Structures are given as C-alpha cells and as structure tokens.
Image (cartoon, rainbow, N blue to C red; front, side):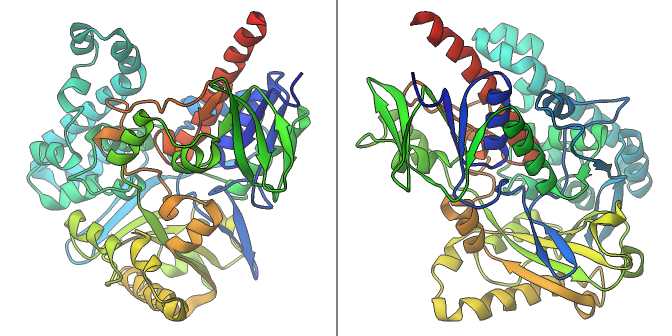
Length: 505
C-alpha cells in the first residue's frame, strides 16, 4: 500500500482545488508547499493598517444567485461557497487615455451597448453585432468546441462551431479592425488584453472576446478578505476531509518506475510513495527539474521550444489616507494608458522606460471593508518581463525599482491627481519578486504567452509518465477562474483513473 493515493506539489489555486477535490472524494492526499502559507498568487500581506491583495483584480465565472455560472458550481463541489463572502462589482472597468477617451463600462451587456452607442453613435449597429458575436463565440468555444474537436470531423466542427471556425486563428486586433473604424472604441473594447498578457495583434480573439463577454454577462467579483480568504477556505476544506499539508516543504524529485510515477522526495529528504502526482508547479520546472528522468521526451521539448515564457508584472501596493470618493474613483478596475495603441503600451514591458499603461485597482470601492474607514487600498500594476530586471546590477536594483514605481504612479496621476501625496503605506514588487514567491520562470504570471498555439484550438497535452497531471496556468489559460477550475478538473481525472487502477490490480 502506498503512503498516499496522490501527492500535490504546490498550494497555488490549482494545487488547492486539486487537493481538496481529491481528498473530499476519498483519496488519501498529501499537499506540499514551499512557502509558509497557501495560495501562490491568491495571498495577502499586511503593512500597517492595510491587508493588501497580492494579485486578484477581478474574479470571473461566478454569476449571480439568479444567473449562476460555472465557478459557483466548482466552489460548491469543493465545499467553500459558505466559507467565503463574494462582493459583486457594478462595472467591468474604466478605460482612460487622457485627452482622447474616458469611458466606464457597466457589468451588463445592454448597459455596455448603451454606453458605447452613446459615446460612439456612428458605430452603434456594429457594437450590437460585436457583442452578439462575442456571446455566440463564448458558447461555442467553451461548450461545443471540445466535443466537436474530439470528433475530428471537419463538417461537425463547421456546423456546430461556425464562429470558432471563423475566428479561431484570428487575432483580436484583426477582428476589432473588421468591426470598427474608431481607434478609441477599439482600444476601449480591447482593454482587457493585460489580463491575458499579450497585445491585441498577437492575442487570439477566441480568448479576448469570450473574456469580455463573460465579465459583462456574469459580472466581476472580489472576495471579502481577498483571495487569501479563498485559499484559506480551500485549505480548510481539504484538511476537514482528512488531508495532510506540509508547508516550508518543496518537492525535490518526482520518482518514476516502469513509466509511471511512484513517489515524491522533498527537499528535506523525506520520500513518500503514491500512485498519482498533481503538479501545480510550472511545466518547465516539473519536466526539467522534478522528474527523475535524464531529459524530457522529444514531444515535450518541441512544445517548450515553440512556447514563450509569458509576461510578469510590476506592482505598487498603496494604502492611501483618503477614501475612494475623495480620490475621485468611479470604478474598482481602471485601465490607464498614455497611448491608444496597445502595441506601444506593451513594448514598454520589455524595458525600463516610462510605462505607458497600468491597471489601477481600488479594492474598497465596491466593498469598504477592504480598507480602514476613510482610506483606500490600491493596487497599481503594469506588465513587465523579467529580462531587464535580471540583467540589472544588484547594487542599483533597490533604487531602480522605486524610481520605476514613481514613474508608474505619475502615469496614474494623470487620471487621479495628487495620488502620491496620499500614500500612507507602500510596497513594491518587481518580476524578480514574483519569481521569488511563485518560483516560476521569469516570474511569469500567466504561464506561457497566450498566443494562438496556447489556445485549445492547437494546444497539445504534455505527455509524461502515467500518473502525472499538470494543473495551473502552465497547462492552460492563466488567471484565477481558469486555475481554480483546472485543479478540480485534474482532481476528477485522478479520481477516475485511480478507480480504474484499483480495479485492474
């Protein structure tokens, strides 16, 4: 008999949902986490009176009580819906390029159509057509396409998924150019591109269009207490079901025998046998460093060669001594850019020049409990790759990160004047900070760059030893909803396979 039925490596979103999902269905599960708290990106930290949310800007996939969506079912299955309070946001975002466009979109399809038609009356008909296509594409892409693809029948694919066929390999820029003439409108509709990590001329429309539609139709949410509250709830659910967790314990080796995983050794030298391993670590780390083989199979190497490590982030966490109303905040999520061209904005992610775009999140706009009375908790973030920071002389790193933070704050002050004067607490994270805490190559927050090759249209499953399962941003889409769901999906697959394994013995 093995020590455990399954071992989960990493207590990020997917690791927690995988562990809870398996343990609640009867599998003896061990969860290993190198940090001293659960969550990965889903954590918080305290400075003074403020408890800062590390990474969650908007949670998708929840829906309301009368219009529920898939993530509610996921959390119900994991036993955490009654452990966490969810806060609904009234707007999906405010998009502002000072002097050119400033529009706030409500969390409602009819509301978005009305607002944009009022702002861009000459494009009103096209706006309605675009939203309709986004809705149809969303249904096809997530509901119909997986089965149609599995059939390997081109006629069935074309019949059941005409919009996937039409838009499946086209970029978001290409599709927006097809529908609209006004660059301001295209920029406003494409504002979510930083959530996927690539500019519109590289980003597949099958990722952007459905994301936009789902936030509008099912509304964005926060969690009271931040994403750390969900991480804690998932850990509680796991342990209440009898699961075992070891913090400050990284996995060192995944052992195999006869083409199948058979155990894990930790950094402390403890070895545990098991039939299944779910890795929430990056696929690069899993295949190149954890597995006990000499080198990854050719299929895995080929996928790694054509995949690019995705973007990281530069984040300024600020506690302000003024309320959102005093600051002039009108939406929790704000995309602020100095240029309408997202390519110009994105290019600043590759250098330490002045940032041209940022995401400004005021967490207590919709829920005052996120900050002390009369104050505000702000997350200010821009996309950054790790390379410029890795190449930096360590002696200038400290000054460089605070200089860059000053310039990012100056960008936000174009919309929120005097922001800097109200800072009471501040903490700054660079891609190197993200790399240190998440242990991901380049501090990547979405896994590989989410280009067309990383969509379900083309993505291949990495073929490793039997009993190994990948869960997280490196084996599918990044972001909170996808990774929560990926972990539960991996858990359900392990449960099925474990039943078959026992039956065969």
